[in-house]
Amino acid sequence: MIDADAMDREALAALLRWYAAMGVDRALADEPIDRFAQSARKAAPVDPPAPTARSSPPPASRQPPPRAPAAVLSQDAAAAGAREQAARAKDLEELREKLAAFDGCALKNSATQLVFADGAPGAKIMIVGEGPGADEDRIGRPFVGRAGQLLDRMLAAIGLDRSKVYIANVVPWRPPGNRTPTPQELALCLPFVRRQIELVAPDFLVLLGASAAQTLLDEKEGIMRLRGHWRDYHCGDRTIRALPMLHPAYLLRAPLKKAQAWRDLRTLRHALDQKYGRDSAGVS
Ligand code: URA
Image 1 (tube, protein in one colour):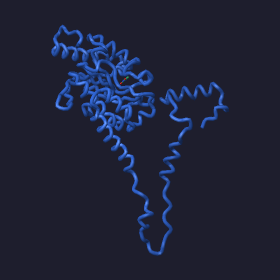
Image 2: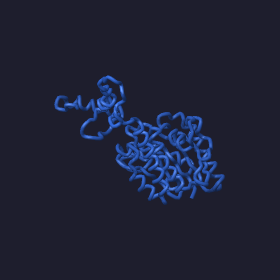
Image 3: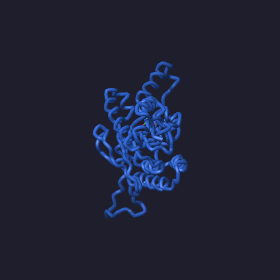
Image 4: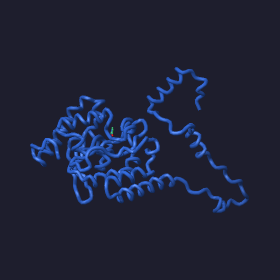
């Protein structure tokens, strides 16, 4: 535990800045937990039984219980709970309630709130991103920070806005420090976002970034290869056309890639024109 009295203000401020730079931007509890000490205790060898004249196995009641499956089982149980809860939701509001009540994904513990969706629930185009950032976590709506503002400009460039699209993420809680969600977190949240897509029933899916594209298309290929190519997303008895694209947060870091994003936006606009007619600047 840090002795704040022993540190001057400047040293404390420097420590906080260092924490923030490392991605530690919130406290989860009042007291720190020493995970190294915990795992060292767990790994400590159990005292061997005292040698006896005849080496016989210890009585069954004294044998240590089998280890390991606990964590796996709890992930399995959480995944089964996610599938069951998601399948039960009859509409988007119920899905939001079930997701808010779901405790199987640890991301919920560090997030401020659930970030479920934005835009028009009846939209023909659904956009799926990775997960909320700090601004989304604070406000409770997806894509409201800098990446979201760029997304708005990208949509405007092809005649769309939030009244014509529905926006969600593959994980609805902010990963701490904006890290990429783990495969386990993605798998736990997948039944919910799949049900969300089923309930919105869009004609087109836009998958922003590797997490959304790989998770929803069950793909290992990188986003640089996936982007710009139409894929089929299977949803119940429907097949939805899905277009992976570069994530706007990535475009903020790599502005030269905007040329590729522009090409992909034109690919999307072209498909909309073909389906709804050239004069439908916006999709109703
Ligand atoms: N990035 C995402 O993937 N989703 C958001 O909601 C915000 C930023």
